[in-house]
Amino acid sequence: MFGIAVLFAAATALPSAGRVAFLVEANDPAALVAELTSALDSGDPLVRATASRVATVRAAAALLPKLRETLSHETDPNAAREETRAVVILGKPDDIDRVATPPMLDLVARAAARRTDAYEVYINKLRPLGFAADAAFFMQSLWQRGTLLSAVTARTLGRGDTRDWRILLRAIRQSAVVAEPNILAAALNSSSEDIRTESVWYLVHGFALDPKRIDERLRAALSAPSEEASLREGFGRELLRRMLGGERKDDPRWRDWLQTEEADALIGSEIALFEYFTDSELAARKNHCDIARNDCRIPPAKPRGTAIPSTEVKQPEFLLPDVLPPGLAEAVVREGGCNGDWIGLARASVDEAGRVRELAVQPIDMSKGCQRVVSTLMRLSLASTDSIAAPRATGDLLLVHVRGTPICLDEGPPSPTPSVTRVAGDGVTAPVVKRKVEPQFPEAARRQMGAGHYVIVVVQATISKEGCVRNLRLVQQAPFADLNTAALIALAQWRFEPGRSGGVPVDVLFNLTINFRI
Image 1 (cartoon, rainbow, N blue to C red):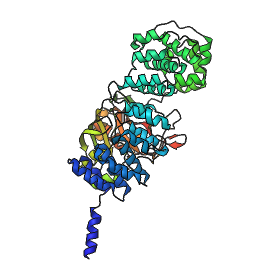
Image 2 (cartoon, rainbow, N blue to C red):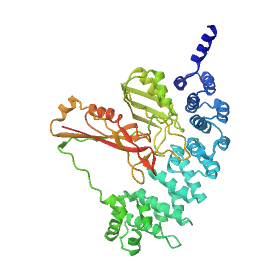
Image 3 (tube, helix red, strand yellow):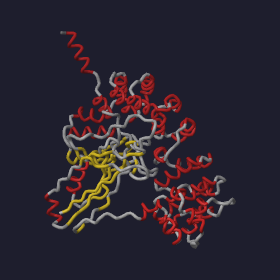
Image 4 (cartoon, helix red, strand yellow):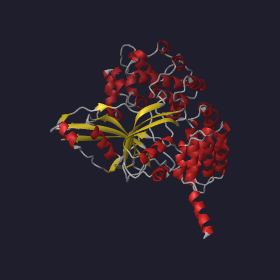
């Protein structure tokens, strides 16, 4: 009997994933390292993965030797992913040489983008191994990092890497920042026709709505290059000339080129450019099959009744919580004794790696246990950005969950290809609703609205590759707070057939609209 009691006590002392997760708020650094060291020896892969995540977000570099040792004999793919992420973010450049195997290369690159030396690591280690940066990599690695943008832009141009130059300019434009004019002026007169063309079309798209913002140094650099420009470069320069007040003249070369796939790729769906076309050029584009989907869209039917105006909602600078090792979110909920719904708001600030440094949760309808759970899930998350210029602090993070629905924070299976949230269109199919929950229509709002009136609430969400809803955020809100709450609670319970890219399920950003009508 005595032996059985001892064995039982030892078993109950083993750390669970939920208990290890709550160490993210531990106050004693030495005790934290000791507890995480023990957790990394656990036979449970979720416990090891959780300990690795806590080490990452707490910047516990003292655990690096233990993390390297654990990773060296890890057999579970999800635990290996977290241990690798921790070693890359916390470790030295030489660690990347050890862990950047082909199956893990994309994971290593995404983690390396959070390092202060991300560009050096990319050039010296990741690029030679075959990783090619995308806009998300550049945005994460340059996120609020001072003068680094100018240095990276200059070095990328100096390397003459056309692909990186194109992707970097895309990241800059998507971030609504402006490339350094002196560097861009040099690019406009580069010996590389590809680099000149990418630079010209960056200016076309970036300044179509307000050409007066084009710097004088760039205007001076826009004279035709010494060699004959290609049609793609030539038409871009022609558009810039017109944008700056030049006369519009028809040229059969432009009309022919505007009906090619090359033109499709460069013009895209930027309708603002059409303002600078001649009538014959616009007719050529309208006759071209690919423009029909942009110019000939049928507007949705207007709802019956009198509209009550919705208002635009300022979007948060980044989103939390984000994906975690599979099973961890549910383990945290169990450990925290959170058995109900929750809805609330939060403010957070993060460091250059996206680790939460300050957090304030404002419960609206949330128990104490759930408040602790939500805080832990957010502190375990790594924030990502979609803009180089986005502040590292944000408010108005919506926290919505309905009891009985998945937490929807499980990271997908390890994959050599990136797991990037897409927007429906351009080869990505839209999610399709499988289960719809109608929102409750609060009686107080009915009385305030009156008969014959309607109001629209628009919510954006990430529809995961599993078809569940993550990170709800209001895009347009009704003037009645209880209607907005009702819409969020209902949409949190919807289920989808996920969006797909090339037939493979992917995370998709998707707008959902609810019309409250009497």
